[in-house]
View 1 (tube, helix red, strand yellow):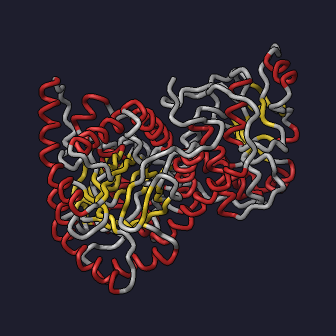
View 2: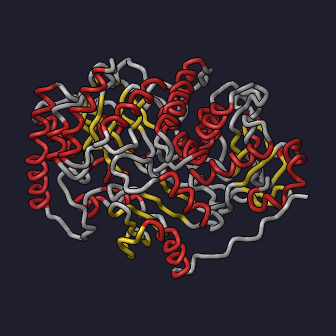
View 3: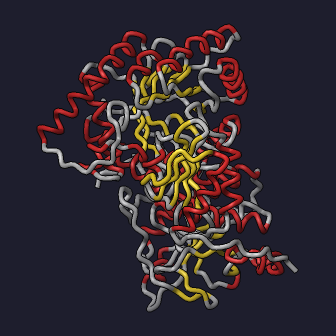
Length: 589
């Protein structure tokens, strides 16, 4: 099996060619670059300039602005002019969907153009159609005809292009040949890359974005392998991001799982954390993730070479056997369990009734979990020859990065033994709150995406309630245990047709008690139908002041006035038998 990185047990950044975006170089030996995106109307020049300057002040190195129409794209001239007058030469990226002509206009004024191969030359109709090879080749010829004018102007002006695949907007052609899969995402991007290379254009990079971290991780890994297979000079940089990550702790956790686990394996040259918040809040999170990756070079290396125990391109949970721990089954088909230290369990016990489904389940010190010393081959051999499976974890004090350590454990210990994941082996080591949240999400989330882990223990976050909440939220973000309503919410941008932050808050206030229901909140239709493919219900901006409601990816109600739309969404949930009344609040005694 060809590997997606040089060594999944030793951090080493993937070697790429350098792509230049104005004054900023991406890839090669350059640091991982931090990007963000404006949330305002592109025609509002003053606000665009103000937001850009604010982003740059926080450390943002590249700023993306949506250009949904030719008129919006033309106004990038004014935005760029006023930024230069203010002494700001930050590279600007025009975000293009559906409109090749908007891309051509934007390319006159910016340093980079992002295109989405799923809708640059295709109009998604959700049609089921079989393409023979001749018909498929004809479609590629049509794409080349649409793409070539942009390549020519980018080559002339020395601009960069991001070929940015979104899981939620794959073309009907790709969907019908490859399905809604990581492979489909990769092939969608490679179609455009082959055209670029045909005309000797190489100043481009890729992205493979999804709201599902497991899909995103598998897609980037698969892309890395496919680029290796194409040849040594296909070493283009990668832009990382999780689409529709959401807001608050949930959005930060989902981004950390997707982006952080790839960075840990050396993939990624520039990142954007997408939050349903003002974009200045994205930059500190992205910078903290980059800082985490920089720390990997200082960590201890494993002593031997190991083979991966899992398929890194297709998610499958490790085949453990259930073990009863203090009357609670761990492993097998059971949901991932949340452990707590005795101290935190005792402090939280008076609140268990109020915590309900989010109370800690097992006390670590009373669990009889077997702590494995990875250097003790005799102990590992003994565990592997036990008559019955036991829950295993890694001994505290281990100096390896937790991702590396658990991959080694999974390669040495028989899969029938359930695995308890720890976010740290040095629980007394001080760490700031944001770094604790992000590194816990990376360490545990990466393993869950690898299919490893039947239970978790959070100790970097010291506050008892916060540590348990963090654990449950990591499980939810990774899709391993759903304990509350799941929201897929996009970040705002100039395409957004309503206020995402206030609308998401209103939808959450009405639906937060609907355990296991997944609701997508989308500002426009760019990613809406596709990213909602695995959502139960969708709330999508259809026109200014008007909302369309979806069941799955099918629109069922159109042009609902915005002030009625949340109530109509609740009615739709009722119609489909997913509604329950919110329980009365329980007071802790």
